[in-house]
Image (spheres, rainbow, N blue to C red):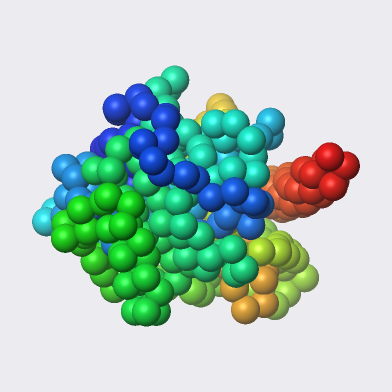
Length: 327
């Protein structure tokens, strides 16, 4: 399956329209906490448009970046073609960061409106979002289901605000994402997404599941949501040269690292254990005998970059909260 970035997921149409304004007589929520809004959201219902037609299992992951930018990763399953689709974008607050009004871009400098008009202010467990007009409406939840009473409350609220709620489509969630990324190529080496295959007897492999000292390497601990952690790890992988992510699932990443001169390929795999909050890792050369420690150094570099990203994220969040308290 070849990866194709199609404008088929949440909010792409708002980008195309290039309008970031709030629809008339709608008011985004105040007292908004952007840090609490980060993480993974599932689309429970939407007003359908061509860019999301036939899509089920739609989700969005929001991750903090530098200088107030938010990374956006949207996914959905096309029931007609039988393919997973994903698209990456960025978001920024339109003005005051305590107001739930943002602009989102999936295509260069073109932004569209993303306005949170209803929100669970206590748990941040559900939200209702409008685009630049009342033709765009999404009901989101932190889980794949939403209490029916809460859903009906949001639908009634949307109707009172002038949305045509008779056109709402309930979105089903019955699949696990398996997404092929740019370039196609080899499938994952492990036979199952939740278990890495053992290292061979040769020394050109390291694994956090290895039982011998020669091959063993510590897993990578993490905090927070697995989906957000996965997105952060993908950003780190993309910072390396000659790297291609060839398989992505909700708890698994498989990347290929290619050497500069001889074009040797190493397979690097990550399995996310949401219970223990660790990333099981394996890095192995496809050919040869000795790797002169390349696979071990690679994992340790990724570990260091990941730890720094978590520290930066914590400090950025703390600084933001301190600034709010200082006002």
